[in-house]
Length: 121
Length: 121
DNA sequence: CAAACATATGAACAAGTGTTCATGCGTTTA
DNA sequence: TAAACGCATGAACACTTGTTCATATGTTTG
Image (cartoon, rainbow over all chains, first blue to last red; front, top):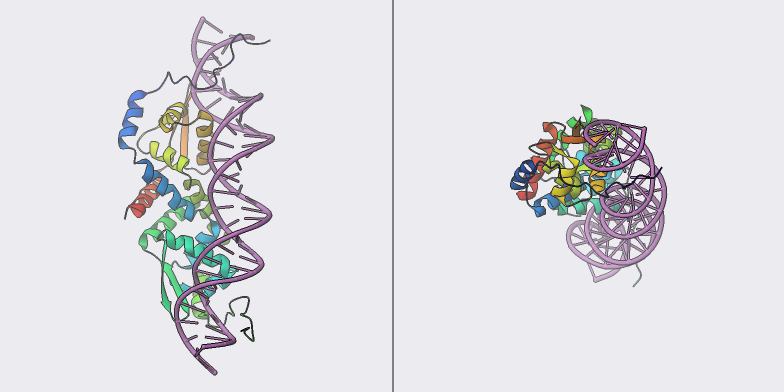
């Protein structure tokens, strides 16, 4: 019942379309860009942060308003805003004791909108 | 040196711009959509998967080619392809023993491109 | 039909990530 | 200037997530 030869542990890499592989390598973005791109999407990849971004879609809001809107602690919102800020997804302005946040640019809006289209198709 | 009253544990929610809050609530997507959107971006938020997607940016490839291109195990690639497939980011066709993968639609290409623009600005 | 091959799947471990608690910072007001 | 207020930060815990090992599918070939 035992086969004479076990399956090879890995693909033998014999049937490759080497031409295709080379062409891909020529057009592939740098390792750093791909890494940073993933880091960017990682920021979008949390429902709390997506909610915050959508809450800011049309107007600026202060931290306290967001906390109320999202039913979250102010602390939790602050932590996420820090991450969003660090990745240039939101900007802020200070007015007295209050800090107002808003989306950094239309880039962010476009990415959100495209993603929304995708999940709804 | 001790203050008479400690700070309140949370924001008192007294200074809110209730009008703004109500307006946001009226335009906010549903809870499910926001959750699904985050799940989608979570898929983009891994450097391995981003690499796979970019490797497929211009042409279809088999699993073995991808494994070689990315310097990864075929097993690891397969696991990620499963996730990408489940979220409709890639599609595939079978040809004999080989399975060729490609990007599902231009939606995916657009999201990748927009993200790349953002990190490069 | 059994062996070889390309790919897929399940369980388990290691590493990363978000929340909370406690506390600190910066601004205003009495 | 001290207290109140809105917000920010650091450490610790619980949970999620990606990888690997072993094994299972499905397809082709002798």
